[in-house]
Length: 110
Image (cartoon, rainbow, N blue to C red):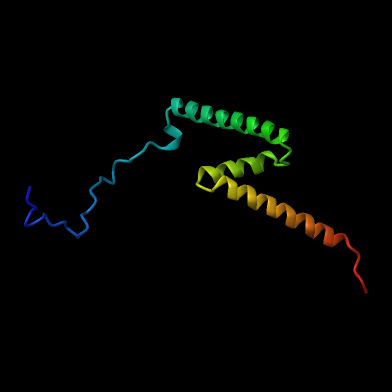
């Protein structure tokens, strides 16, 4: 099949967005149907259960991460942070904290 001699030109001008200001795009939060609220509650409960399970695993592995720290780690990983890199950063921060505590406990030499 021979190539087209004159391919269609794309318009580089912005087209005006058409919408009606008088009609809202979503119902106000107070008028949300109860079904969606139930779904949100179910999602929150499922997230709590996941963190509970992760906390148990964390305790078995002696990671010394609390629920908040675990939640932050999960959030970072869900947003694309490499888990191995995150683990390395946590280990490095703990080493630095431990070494600074040791240095802080050494009496000053005068």
